[in-house]
Image (cartoon, rainbow, N blue to C red; front, side, top):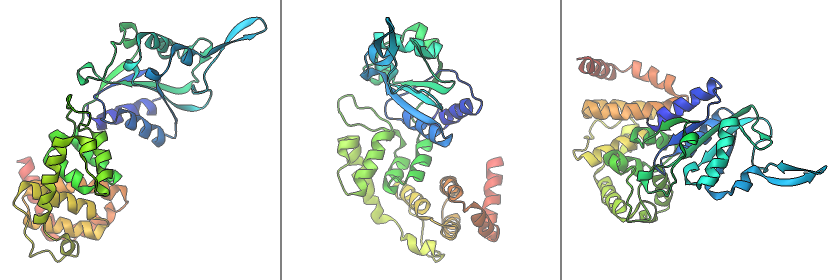
Amino acid sequence: MNPEDLKTYLDRLITNNLKISTMIWGAPGIGKSTIVSQLATAHQLEFIDIRLSQLAPTDLRGLPVAEDGVSKWFPPEFLPQRGQGILFLDEINMAPPAMQGMAQQLILDRRVGSYLVPDGWFIWAAGNRKEDRAGVFDMPAPLANRFLHLQVEADFESFKAYALGQGVHEQIIAFLSFRPSLLHKIDPQQPAWCSPRSWMMASSLHYHGMDLAPAIGMAASAEFQAFILTYQLLPDLTPIFEGKGSHIAFPIEPSARYATAIGLTVHATDADRAYHAFHWLSQVAPAEWVQLFVSDLLGLVRSRGQLGMLAVLIDKDPSIQKFLQDYRQLVLG
């Protein structure tokens, strides 16, 4: 499944209060822990992220303390004592077998020694795959059998929707629209390589005019630097947003077309600008580029609460209405 599918599936577990231990498998850097954290926030749940690979078995079970002549185990402070939340065991298969064995009781019985996980808590885990060279241990069959297993893959459309909402630099989004295969590409020979996580870091660097190679590697950084030269070929978007772009042609080069479509999406900050961008693009661009723009735009407009205003403007524009009708006929065939 892609990250959006994963988010939907986990959301349904929460909505239906299914306290089934769940294991999320996927390559490093694709956003597994970020998705879980976002869901916790969305549902107003506490979120505890435990890296089992950094703990010893006694760290999870706690310390024995003599009380009335009997040894009792005092649980660690990082385990939940009350309330509702998600207990997230990240990088679980990077933990050595002894640690995974200690986690087995927590996952199966929702307890370790005398400690009990409160009823309001979900227990989820995540791990990387062997093929990703992540230095993982085999998960024991008895432990694996106690989980639901969800496989997640990097997906550009899911990343793009997230990146647009998070303010990732438009040139990063445009480049990856042009070269989506570079969204996630592990280079075992280099410490820096492409992943959704490293592209988020690259965006921060790019906003400050810094070299991207330390985040995404030399090869991808060189390709990106070549790509941004295409911005010299882009039309001025200001007249387009003002409704004065009838004399402006749509670029011919595919890289410049991606950059233009993403630029229009990112800078359509209100319903009027979005409408003028839609109108211009529907007049000068092939249908597939208008579709690309609209699919990206609608999510942003909806999140800003401007969808109704945009719909009113579009409804009054016969040329857009004709485009929508022609496109619908083309799709339905």
